[in-house]
Length: 462
View 1 (tube, rainbow, N blue to C red):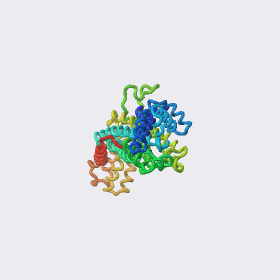
View 2: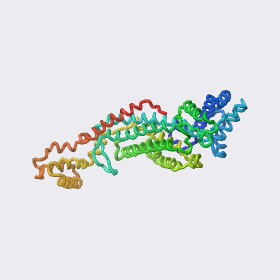
View 3: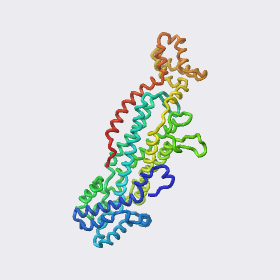
View 4: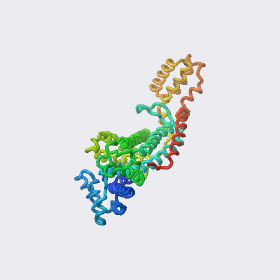
């Protein structure tokens, strides 16, 4: 698989290599070798033929660009591949060449090859996810009591805990990690059906051949061919898109909190990372940029997978081919996004002082709801709400802290005299104390997430 310079910019060389032309072709040859060996074990073809076929199932022996060009004319890469494999076997044993690809069809080869390389891609995603989630959970534990502004509709709302925010970033990633493992267990299947999915050429021995091949390749043995039954496969691809979306949410928050005017977070710097060609002072959040670019592309790829599920009869015309073309891009986006954010959070710079200053700069207005609820116990909710509306307007108009306005009102308003504890009232303006509800929730969820992560400690799955 060749990618443009701009695709390469947004992903990693390791995931590109997983879907590289040579990797996919080699996976196709693995299918052919496994097919021959399984058929020999079941007595369908001679052992000597299986050995001859398997001995030349090596992508390095073939002109891969020529195979791709021929596949474009033939309508399937498997057709020239089988032709060249047959010719190569015939060079050593003409009789064995007659048994190449016996009873199989082009889609069997390609779907199985895609299952094999997708398994490699999923293992790569899982390992990178593991590292990113670990970083998020460790940061969350460290910052359970760190006050930070919670923002709704892009505006300051209340004080929360930065640890609570980090837990909220980690949780969807853990859910996707678990889902990808579960879905992979169902979707990574051998494809073997022959011309119309019935294994007719192999007769009663077809299912036994499929079982042997599945064991050899480490794939699930399917109940039947899934040539045009794409549901399990597409669910797996869609979960990759959901993961990319969750990473995009993290990248959105990170980029906003890293804005110069906010300055609460910063990606690692050094070695030219995040620099500007024109403005030496700039420190661009490049990890967030890569993740956001991925999140902007994944929905279209996911939509293409769904749009092409309506495959005609027993073999699709055009829609299966479109699915194949879209599939690797989802994984390139996911691993590019994961790798970028893993790097960012491994060296993330958190500025708790700036978080506090951003809270203080709001003149205590974000504590108005807590104060209103506290005062409601003394004067009722409508009166307390009305009073706080007046006091917040005064604080904004006169440029002083809401705590001062509340303190004056507590002394002068006859409705509050002797009914409100001033010290308790002033504690409502303490940012650290205000994180208590978020801390409690985050601490509980953190333990759950750590247990989930521990249960998935070994980054290994079907």
